[in-house]
Amino acid sequence: MSMMVDALEKVERTLSRERGEFTLFALFERQDIPMRWDLVVAAPWIEQDNEQAMHILAAEVKKNLPGNQIQRISRIILLDSGDASVRAIISEHSVEHGRIEIEEVSHYGLPADRGYLITSRAAA
Image 1 (tube, one colour):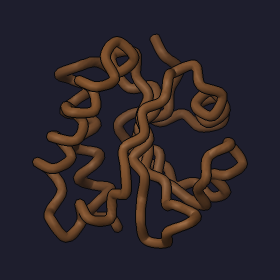
Image 2 (cartoon, one colour):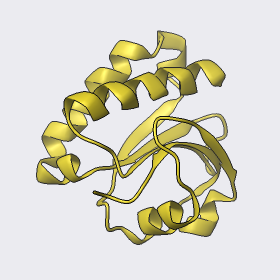
Image 3 (cartoon, one colour):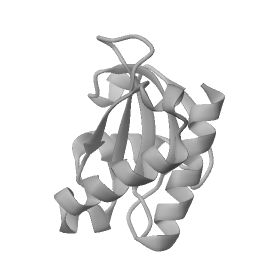
């Protein structure tokens, strides 16, 4: 797990530098499929063009995650920075380019039990 989170920290840092900062960049384990993870992201630059942002994110994830780890990513979920779940997370947790492990993610309205926050910060 640590290797996958390390690789995603690199993805987050690279895209923050190249595209703009994230409001949320997190990895959440799915409730319905154990050992499968959703990459959940929100950023002002994503909201400008979701389709383009998805291509950029997917390409960077593929570039940085080894093949045996990429299979553990179930999907990439793009959220608006103003989404209620995003606001709830960033109001309780603050981290930028780091790592916070959290439990009971479902408390924030997301279908997950646990996860890792790589960036969780109010939009600038």
